[in-house]
Image 1 (tube, rainbow, N blue to C red):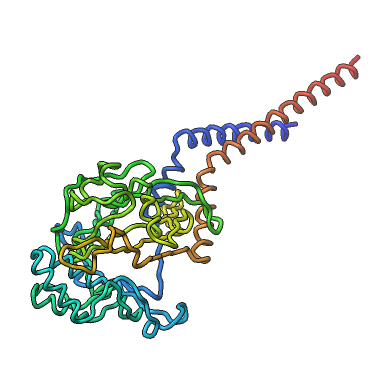
Image 2: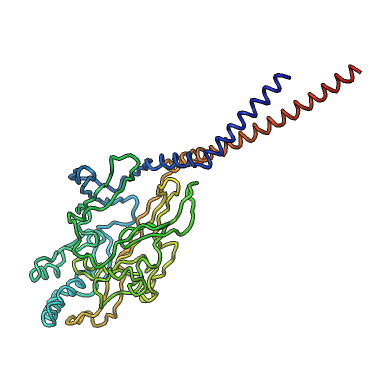
Length: 420
């Protein structure tokens, strides 16, 4: 009897303690706070063998609170993952150097343009050109640009869609703090050695908003919940107003550098970044753009699933599990006074190149994240586990108490009967 009462008392006390502790921890959110603080220091490292980003001139600045470094992004051709030979395969497209030259010389006036137009005709320049993939991407010496260089010495006589990309140094800052619990950030300090950008237009600063990721003019908003390799994630995509024209999105007015020639939704004039060449960027197939751009070119048909840019982030750890960066480079074709070659042009945005940069978490990293998420789930629910155990022990104590008193009543009854 003493043994039963001892078990009853012990289970009751332990159950009550666990119940109180679990309830207190759950209400206070202590374990959730601890696990979230721990996750802030977790860093995922990804490496690829086809892209290199060495750091140069690493130095501490701003009283040791920032690290400045120049980083070079190098692209390497992988034949086993490619089709064809870039040194042999030919591509016919718009003669971009000719279009760029005409746009640069037109400011000199009609007669200068006419004279330059005659020179273009004398060397057989047309509105289209044919080059190997290697030349088109990484550069070739163009005779027209060579001639223009004699008039405008600052002109680069070499042209390539990715000319100098493998040689450019980009300056970044890493902002960090020696103070515990202070958030670490990564940001841009300068671009190609410049602390300020001369082509910046009138645009106001932007801030991070709820469920919104943003960097300068491109931002992303939450679209939907997805799952990849057993890992839950939030998908963020650029909304339609990202590249909307200033008339439909006043926040984008500052990105139109030629106010009298602002383009419509879905395209962005970046000619100031390309030495005056009429380059326009958009999403592939003019996704999220004005319908007139897609309708003007045969074979262009935007599909959200195939042409969207997105980022999938695990909401618990903030780790990217998949990303697709898709962009299209176009040339703005329009009539230029003094150049008969352009007389049949009707203000068209002509697609040149479609880029698709993608990354997906590997299986080994996915397995590690799954284990971490399981640990997070268990730790986060530990107070509830304590509450459940406390409830069970209290119930056991109640059951033992009932049985104890039932046995006591039976024993007393037997004693009375024996005495009678």
